[in-house]
Structures are given as C-alpha cells and as structure tokens.
Length: 338
Ligand SMILES: Nc1nc2c(ncn2[C@@H]2O[C@H](COP(=O)(O)OP(=O)(O)OP(=O)(O)O)[C@@H](O)[C@H]2O)c(=O)[nH]1
Ligand SMILES: [Zn+2]
Image (cartoon, rainbow, N blue to C red):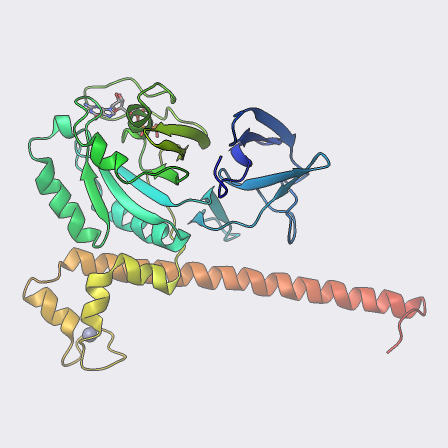
C-alpha cells in the first residue's frame, strides 16, 4: 500500500449495508451496517449516503467517511432534484461506447462534461474494434466532440488497443467505467486484468448486451507495475447533467474559444452582428450539432442548478421555521434571554 491509498474503501453499497475493502495487503472485505436512511457518519459534517470509492476510517468499530477528493454526480431528474453520486475519489473516467453499433456522440459529450465536473480526467474508449472496418475514422469523429480528451479504440477479442488503454492507468489510480449496457465495460476490465474479475453478458449477434452488471463495484485491477482500482457501473442509456460553468468550458473548448471572438462580450449568438459562432457554423468550421449540444448542456445545467438552489432555499426556510418554533418554545418556558 502506498501512502496515498486509504486502507478501507467502499467497494459496494447495498440497501442496509456497505461492503468495505481493505486496499492494503490483505484485501479482506468487511460489511458495515448503514444508519437509517442509508447513511454513514463522516469524519466532518453530517452523515451522508456513501458511494462506491469512498475512503473510510474504522475507529472503535465505527465507520467514518473521509472527505471526497472527486465525485461523479448525475442528476436523477426527479421532482425532488436529488443528485446521485455514481463514484467517489476517481482519477480517470473511462467513457466506454461500442464501435458497432455506432457510438452515441451525444452521450459521449454528456459524459465528458460530467467527468470534467467530477474532478477526474475523462478518456473515451471505443470497444469492439474487431467488428468495425475503420475504427480510426470513428476515433477522429469522436475526437471532434471530445477535444482535449484521449480517445482510443480497443478490441477485447483481438487484444488490439489494450496497451493504449493500459497506458492511461497507473499504480494507485482509481478509474470508473461508464457507458451503455453492452458497451463492453466488464469485458474491458477483464481484458485489462487478464482474468475474469467481472461477469459479462453473452455475445449476441446484434452487438447489444443485456444488463449484466447490476451493482457498482470497486475492484483491484492488477497492472504490470502495481494495482489500479476500478469501479464498474451498470450500463446507463442517459444521464442527467450536473455541471458547473468550468466543466462546460472544459467539455466545449472549441465553442468557448469562438465565443471569445464575437464582437459583443454578451453575444447570444442569435443574429448579432460580428458573431463568431454563427460565422463558424456558416463556413463549416463548427458543426451545427456541436453548437446544439453546447446550448442544450448549458440550458440543462442551468435548470439543474436552479432546481438545486430552489431546494436549498426551501431547506433553509424550513430550518428557519424550525428555529422560530424552538425560540417560541424556549420563550414559553422562560429560558430565552436576549
Ligand atoms: N466482438 C466483440 N465483442 C465484445 C467486445 N467487448 C465486449 N464484447 C461483447 O459485448 C457484450 C457485452 O459486453 P459486457 O462487457 O457484458 O458489457 P457491459 O458494458 O459490461 O454491459 P453491462 O454490464 O450490461 O453494463 C458481450 O457479449 C461481450 O462478449 C469486443 O471487443 N469485441
Ligand atoms: Zn456570438
């Protein structure tokens, strides 16, 4: 164990308990019951819902969550505007899509933005290269919607490209794999590990998998020079966006660079004179789909932020009411002094 690896990490979260993994030498697992509401205490702050990848200290038989250094969050898009932490303490988010059928560029853009927001570094892995005539053409296409992101193609069948993916890993690094069901995430983990560490879906002629992975899980991934930690996630078709401004800027550096060339600082790119965005779409430098994605990410992230702050305001108001009630009660029993 190196100094940066916490000894215990949350390997799996169930309804009533978490499974902790000793990331030191022993690799033993240990179940710890959750508090009502599925919560675990923290070393600082209020109890919280644990996430796979969380670091934990065990002290006097109590499990305490340590502060997270990064977290991959998605909007669960229900009325309560709750978000869900898909994985914690990551360094690398591998966005996995198959080459055949064709990958979803929109989903890749979305995961890239989410990954930048998490604090981890995104990379895209296009699987099933053995089923595609020209993987490099698709890599180039994906690179256009994921500027400044490593894009690699790989085949778990032939082993082609596996070393390119391994080159992204390092001792002690934590990676998460995200992508739709059947993309080949579990197969990729097994191929990287050189062993069957994850169950995978059976091969089907249409290239689509079924939901084989039902739980997020943290596993040790043996490397030539150490051990990485991998979090495999069940396939997701779509994710709600949670993103701060800077994550959007990192996801869309091509669009953002253009906005800086618009004549007006507050250009809405909607018919204003001297708009660099509209000029770039007109001359083909900027793809219209790319612009549409950027606009929709901005709108969705702004909506999500508004819902979150609405919820926060409600909570503060409720706390205020509770406080007023307590003051009233204290006054009644004569304990309140100014
Ligand atoms: N031809 C080919 N098939 C692959 C490759 N990688 C995965 N598959 C197949 O694709 C199917 C789905 O693979 P999985 O690894 O189970 O996919 P997954 O992304 O983990 O799916 P979920 O667990 O449902 O999220 C399986 O039948 C695999 O055998 C590949 O590189 N080439
Ligand atoms: Zn403009």
